[in-house]
Image (cartoon, rainbow, N blue to C red; front, side):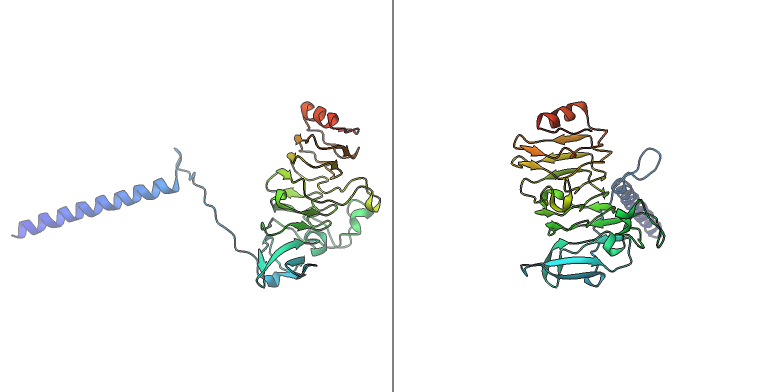
Length: 264
């Protein structure tokens, strides 16, 4: 009888060890390991939005949404909420220099570049990333001026202000611009183009069929390699693609065929 109990316990112990081994194997397969034992799995963690207290905001002109005008928080990784006070966040203004968030290392009172930039800059703090929710459809003038880590779907925007993404470092560098997205007209304020994406890190631009004029401003986009120009384009600025050295010869010819008279 005693021998039977010992055998029973041994069997139970072997069974338990087998179960633990299976669990260990499952855990390893879930985390994913390469032949060197390094993890190959990717974990996507949705970051929590910043609280409303981190922003200065007001009602939009039509009173149906929220317009954020300034970032008041201290964090360097910013997630803009899609709603504030049970209303959708639809507009962003001056999120770059006005909030003191320009991503360049400068000192108080230091002249940076030239007087054009200095009129915006006093003391700037670093930003690692900014996540913009799909609810936002209007980006104000110079909103993300020289800010890095901007995660936004450009194709969903209804209106983009002058210099809105000048010098911006996007998370997704391949962008699509809707035929319905509005930009300031050429010549407004003495500008030759909107300069909306001037000097940004975009690599590819798709312009939706139906857009008739091109005064958006992609000059100084050093990484821009590909541009899809729709046949609907009838007029564009001669400075639209100035100093974009990485554009392929095929792309340059397509842009010229669409009426571009400037240099690359």
